[in-house]
Length: 73
Image 1 (cartoon, rainbow, N blue to C red):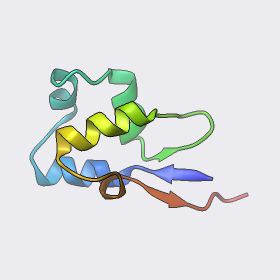
Image 2: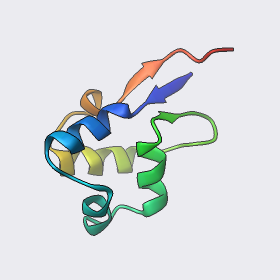
Image 3: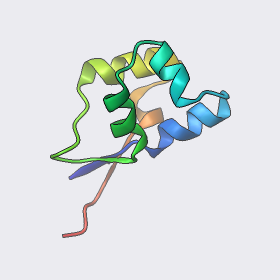
Image 4: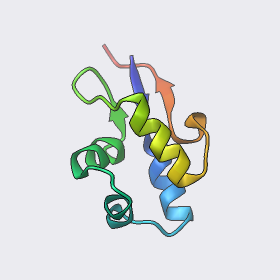
């Protein structure tokens, strides 16, 4: 199982936001890199508090920033 967070980048682009804006809003650079890398899996995890903060900052719902994708096995 993997969760794609590629939609975050699209929302950021649409609103003219950069990584720096997320850092300025208090997001940890490591978390930003995980989120913007695209796909979360067993090794790359983001907790629900971070998802909550992202949704609040981007003014969106969790489904707007992430989706389930099948892993190739």
